Amino acid sequence: MLSKTAVSALSKVGKVHQRSFSLGGVRLNELPCVGVKNSMDVTEAATPQSLSQELKEKYYPQIGNREIVGPSYGAQFDYHDTADHPMPSVRWAANTPEVLALREKELNDWNTLTLEEKKQLYRNTYRQTFAEFKAPTGDWKRIASIVFYTLAASVVLFLYNVTSYGTKPVTYDQDYQQGMIATMLMSNVAPYSGISSKYDFEKNEWKK
Image 1 (tube, rainbow, N blue to C red):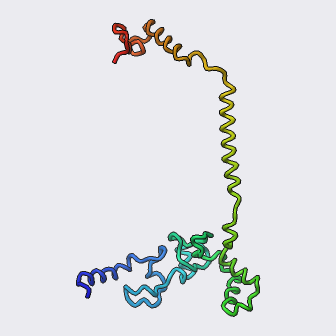
Image 2: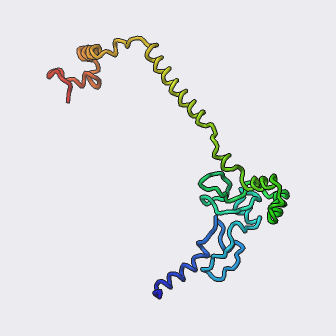
Image 3: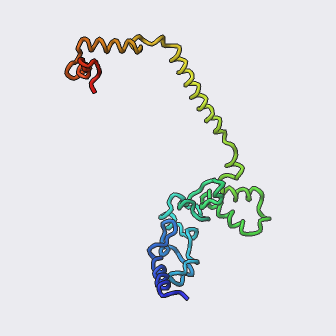
């Protein structure tokens, strides 16, 4: 037996569906539902697969007149070739008269279909086979060439810096720099705010 609190909570959940339940941005009350007898009976509600062309153009204009044949991938109804989601939510080909006629024919005995028609049915739904979209693309060659080019350019620049410049000027020498500082202090350069102002001549050390 459910408690009164649980029964009350379930009844509230049943009332929320009109505001909350949606399928890819389409509210249930906007879909052509079949067999929905009460607020909690949504098992027979229509899915985006049964949308009219008008509603598809309204909510999913990017797919044109292609059929929605499966659940969305990441809340988006689109076509993609991926091994982890091998059943795209929409067909690859648009609904042309030739395609629709072939789909009507496939509802009968498949022995009446030619091999080319069976292949065409597959290509109407899928752009590539598993073997095609998982085949090596050769991108590793492009990536490898970029890596080797970058390494070669780095080596050339390093060798250029090493071989093109001579020895460092004397001003880079530590002893020369110390001598220049001593000369500036003895000449009392910038006594108010410069280097001489930071030296204590009485104690013969830098001010702390």
